[in-house]
Amino acid sequence: MIDYKGIGLKVGLEIHQQLATKNKLFCHCEEFQSDKFDFLFIRRLRPTQSELGQVDPAAMFEFKKGKMIKYHANRRSSCLVEADEEPPHDLNMEAVESALIVALALKSKVVDELHTMRKIVIDGSNTTGFQRTIIVALGGLLKTKNREVAVQTISLEEDAARLLEDHENYREYCLDRLCVPLVEIALAPVEGSPEEIQEIALSLGRLLRATRRVVRGLGTIRQDINVSIKGGKTVEVKGIQKLDLISKIVEFEASRQLGLMEIKNELEKRGVRPEDIGSPLEVTKIFKDTECELIRKAIEKDGTVLALKLKGFSGLLGYEPYPDIRLGKEMAELVRFYGLGGIFHSDELPGYRIKMSEIESLKKMLEASDEDAFIILAGPKDSIFDAMMAIIERAKDALQGVPYETRGPTPDGKTRFIRPRPGPARMYPETDIPPIPITKELLSKLEREVPKPWEEQIEDYVSKYGLSQKLAQKVFDSDYSELFEVIASKTKVQPSFIAATLTETLVSLSRAGFDINRLDEKDLIELFLSLDEGKISKEALPQVLEVFLKGEVKSVEDAIKKLGIVTISDDELSRIVEEIVQENKELIKEKSERSFSILMGKIMNIVRGRVDGAKVGIVLKKRIENVIKE
Image (cartoon, rainbow, N blue to C red; front, side, top):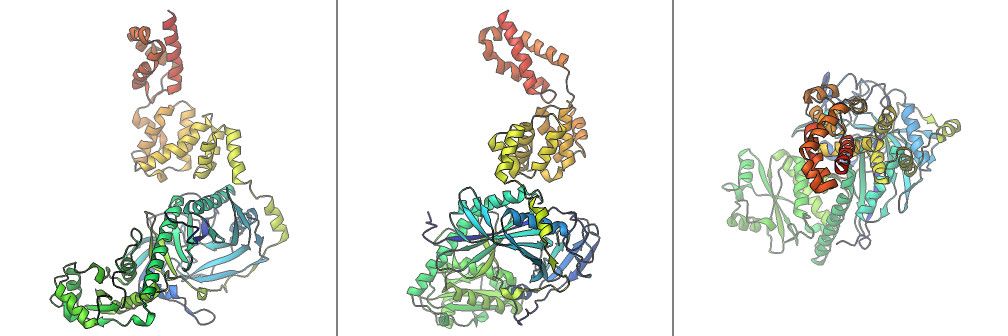
């Protein structure tokens, strides 16, 4: 168990939340997600210099990958602005007001004027090669269940294009999401356990939902976290979409950084210095008759084999201080960005059909002793030298412990290398958009629109709809809180049943493999109206949802028809209950009230889906009581 306080774990949260606006940030297009595209164009993005003549290292790293970018677009969601063929239009004031309401809710100091900046991004996620961002407010305070967390900045910015596929030589993006307004909130770094960090993210997400000005659903909110430990550098983990991954990622990243610090300390003990890490040697001739398939294929394709001696690194490339934390693995992740499958290193050899004679020849050429490690890299001549230089830099970083870098989350709550950390050279002013003053009158108007705290909104659900505290919280945290209120106002269906269906039944169906995104608001409203009108029973509702989600029908009404669900009358129910009771009179005499569950099961086998179970229970209980009296 890691002592997080003892290792000085600090985590800074940045949340990027899509705003629910009619139009995009710099044009009048709407966000409309579709896989049907009207046009395609291709670009190759290049880094530009900052005002001081500097080039951002993250931008240069992306440029060296040499990838072309294919952009797909739908005319409903994209125009010439997204294609960077037309200057941006006026800033969307609806988005500005939403960002300001968030700032006021966090007690932040709103700036006097909004100035748009450009942030260099050339991974293809923006057609311009930069992202537009605007600082809205500074400072502020987020109150959570157990603490207060300082706010650093609140910004308004445009979302990135949606990645479709990442191929070896090119990427494909869709422009439907590009330029959708986002509010970005950066919190000050705090100490705490991974669970406490996740609780902070949950509290901030709830505050945003309380405004009712944000989009809900997977992909509409993304969390970045900046993680560091005592003696190490800050590592950014970008693009965490699921809240419950945050604690896992913080836990993994803390152990990864702690492991790297252990390796650094061991290298210090061994007296290894940066100048001890030399230059690579070409060793292709040693492997000309190799049985190692990966190396042989590289040579057959006119590739090259390079080797690098790492003085004093013996045993540290394969060393695993914590599960799945290895320096060799970190280096292998790095070279994949140059189109190479990975590396071979001395701690895992002999293996991979590399013979002992080849290893001995290699050590002799490198002048490597038993205290040294070495790395073998095989691949095309046009990329292998850049990949090996990246490994050399990573080996030097190992002497410092934790390197500055940007990493991405994996589905199981770990992290992987993406690129170096960007620097200040990536920001410069936007010349196409004039500053916008923020007036006292505007702020005074928006002060009245600051929502109740989320805790009070949850209590409103409890008092107004009679929900339990747990269910009220589930509804508020779900993507269906506003829809819940609409359905509750349109029908006489018990609010607790509506809430349970929207938060529990739909989650169960999603876990069973159904795509609940097929359901839109009108479908769910129609479903509960059918229940309210007696067309279906509560028991039939999951069946109707399943048929609809399988894609077998196009409407709730069609699903009801396909299932052949016809509600039965009170008279018909009484007749069925009477038949079952008469057939089981001896059972009732023997077990008295305990016969209820047995008879209930028999009746429900006949009427399930056509009448509410609670209604059946009332009729049956009364009839059993009559038989007992008789």
